[in-house]
Each structure stands twice: as C-alpha cells, then as structure tokens.
Image (cartoon, rainbow over all chains, first blue to last red; front, side, top):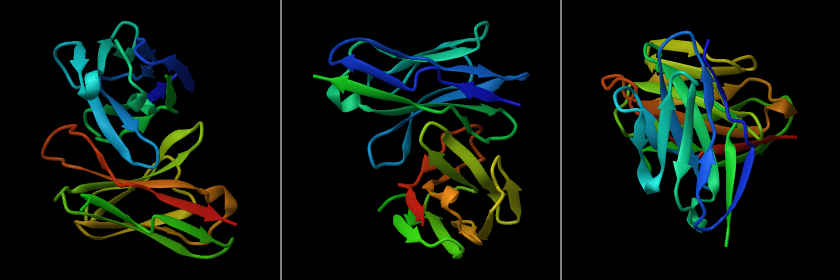
Length: 113
Length: 114
C-alpha cells in the first residue's frame, strides 16, 4: 500500500525567502506524485505532477519539485515566496493502475511580510 | 460556472439525521470521488466511482453510502449522522482517458453534526 508523509505541519517564512515543503512516500511499486494547493475557503488545485521523465518538475506560480527515487522524496520548492502563496499544500501519490489519490496530511505555509 | 459543483456549501444537522451531499460536474469525466478533510489528517478517500455501474469503497467508507445517478452526478449520504462526521467534504473528478491526469475538486461542503 502507498502512503505519504509530510513532515512539517506548518512552515512560517518571510516574504521573498526561499521555501521547501517536504514530502516522502512509501510504495512497493512505481507511483505518480502530485502537489496540490488549497487556498483559504477553496477546493484543491494542482500545482505540479511527476509521471515520468525528468526528475525536476516545474509547476504553476513558480513552484518546482524534484523526484528522488532513492530517497523516496518529492519535495516542493520555491526560490522566493509571496504573501499570496499562503495556503495549505498537499502531497499526493497514486499507483499507475488505480488512479486513486492518497494524500499526505498537509503543510500550512504562512508567508509573513 | 464551476466545473465541479457541490451542494450545499454549508450544512448543520442533528445527530441521527440522514443527510445527502450532492456533486455534479460538467467536465465529462467518468471518474468521481468523495473525500473528507479533517485538520491534521489531510484528505481521506470515502468512496470512488469509475463509471455509473462501478462503485468502490475507499479508506473510510463506514457510515457513508453513495449513489452515481448519472455520469455527471455522484451523491454522498450519511444514513445516521454522528458528530465525528463533522468535516469538510470534497468531491473530485478525473478523466480515465488520460492516464493519471489531475483530479478536479469542488469547493467543498462544510458539514457540522451537532
């Protein structure tokens, strides 16, 4: 069975600072990996996804993530955050044959001026 | 108009009452999902449906039932609501013709059971 661990429940950061949100997964088979963002009082929307190919994936709003198979990680990064990036971020995994998304517990990113 | 619409957006109900949450989509997707979100627990899958005749239990289906009335409609029922079912509920859809395409989420239904 797959599982996803997001080690940080909250990440406070000042505006224009870099940020990394950590995600580790466990699975006995190949998986696909996703990052979703949830802005206050809204549903989730896709930031980026890794299916295959290049391990560095670029997403919307300047975010990127790197798939590391040996460390079973898919950390999300942004070199310079904005106030508008304040949101909850979810890492998710799916097995190629099931299409069910398994979510982590989420990381709340709080950007301060 | 939103591609994935959930109704109601907010609901307060009493313990023991039956309640239905509805989801409709205009994306033409065949796959639909119900998740609940609880603080510190992320999103957990309740039920999912890969087409009108295919319904599957997720991680936490006890106390819930679903109905796929049409390709575009997928409703979630709580037969006898209890306080620990207080949560934010999300419906989502995806397209099986595109392997592992993104899931599209509704705005959520905030349910409070008192």
